[in-house]
Amino acid sequence: MEKVTKIPPVFDTTAQQVGEVYARALLGVGQAQGRAADLVGELAAFDDCLQQLPKLAQVLVAPRMPEADKERILRKALEGKASREFLNFLLVLVKRGRFSALPAIRQAAIKLFDEVTGQVKATVTTASPLSETAQGKLAERLGKLLGKQVRIETKLDDSIIGGVVVRVGDTVYDASVANQLNQVRAKTAARIADSIRGSLDRFATDAG
Image (cartoon, rainbow, N blue to C red; front, side, top):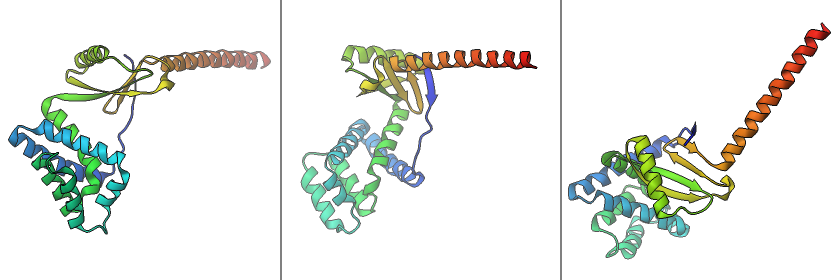
């Protein structure tokens, strides 16, 4: 699989720092109880839900919304459904006015969890869905390449035509048909440009 480019990550420094602080706190609780994976999973699932319920998310981050009302909403929505540790974590975010940092906390928590467990996430983009068997084989191949256990996350994008594009951190491996065609075009254009340049050089020499 061809490594094409590295994409530098773009972060809000303050949000990243806050995310890391609270992510470490959440993982600390999880590790102490042997439930780190569960808490990270709850965090990701809750953040996904908020992305699908933007009005609720706006209420929970609104500075003018009383803290007591936010706590009431969270307790009503999550008591008996989420773990006590995760609910308490969300209540701390509300109390400290850090609920808006939830996406950054999620990102940091997943990264820290992967570091602790020796895993790495690979985002795999294809034109059509990959079977579980294909995902397993790709994870195994990437694991050998990277020397780590690989966790696959899939995405669909018909613009890549075929093949696969894999992103691990800020590195992109592109084996798609679209990329191959682009490389052929680039090589052809370069060859034509070199040919024209050579002709112009000879013309200039003859004219002189």
